[in-house]
Image (cartoon, rainbow over all chains, first blue to last red; front, side, top):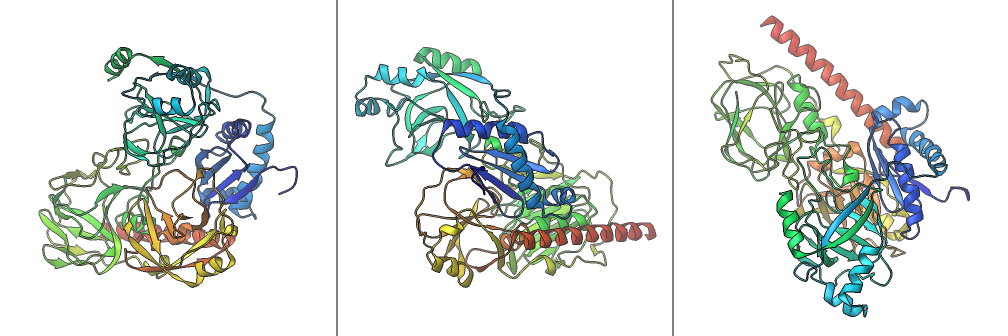
Length: 241
Length: 325
């Protein structure tokens, strides 16, 4: 690693590799990750089994046998490492974001869904209305998907509503719940235990296994939320199921 | 044309070599725990290596072959019998119709694989038949097999097998397993381990805890300490990632791992050691040995070559056998 490479590259065993910018969660670093993701998707799709973008890192899972055939006298790892360095430099030259999708998601902030909303608003000395305003005013980037299928880590929220995870995670968070954890916001695709502060619920289905692209959200998407009433929630929920 | 589960086992499912291409959406690849045993089960009956197979733990299902079939059983030795007669693992077997396969005794290993000639008809989802329990997709309705489940064979021919018979050749498995020695490559946070813990990692034995399953193996043993308690930002993890938990014990992520994780990654089990790890049972102990990237690649590539040779030999023998019949 030289001073001109602000990242580290390291192995995930013998069939994986990660390029990692390190440091804190940052939108500008995540944008680099997203550009690199777009570039890597076009590289050796037969030999690359998975590309997994995360906050500040991106990982490739590859077929060692197939990469070795390309690598000549190098090890497969050395070859993929060399290619990653090349692709990172190339991705940095892209000054626009490719294929960025914009997705608007309705959220009902009714107290029956926003289990922690009142307490959070009190803690932040905001009215419930202005807390909700602050959540819907920004658009968020999907930094990464992890934890469970379709769970999108998005950010960053207005510092005035950023909130630590709950001290005692819930054993049951309903599917569709919209939450905040630190400066991140996210939506639970399934009923699940969880420690995020829950402020509302979307009637949208985040994960549908019958669809060709089963997740509503993908890394790099730009997401906005808009508030809906309880009636609208039930109407949308019924019409989608 | 198929088999029926007449008594369910504890955790039997259809698996193939995994569902790749969807980890960016949080979908785990899943797939067989013991890649080598699954590939060899397929190879013995002339299938392509990645055909879906039945993966079973002990106690395993009792299976009725409603129609005759050529099968192979690999991986663990669970004392397989067919209609009460002991049958051999790692060898093709001709099974007449209306015969019952039982697994009578937990002798060795932890996962047994059953293949049938041409394979099973299973539910494919996103390019794989592997059972995703979390998403209830793939395999048989995305779940463990239950009593009365019928799994159809792709092969619809009547093979006209009158007597139970082993074909006279077997796969040699020993070269693929390392007797509870697990090779690993250092992970991104290995350097954060105290020097004494780096030493403990390779000098101590670690016990596989009862809280171990297809998602991960929790280990019990010498506590490992970090010199710097750094909080990691989540990033990709994989089958074989060794994470250090806050309680100073390790977890090894297995086939149904989450796609990302935030615990320190102190190592990564090599692909060629994963089958050995898959065959370890809770209560057994393992030891770790550090290998270089280059060594791990060389061992894997050698294994692949050996599997290819085995496949060529099996196909040749099968051809010769059925030609002379």
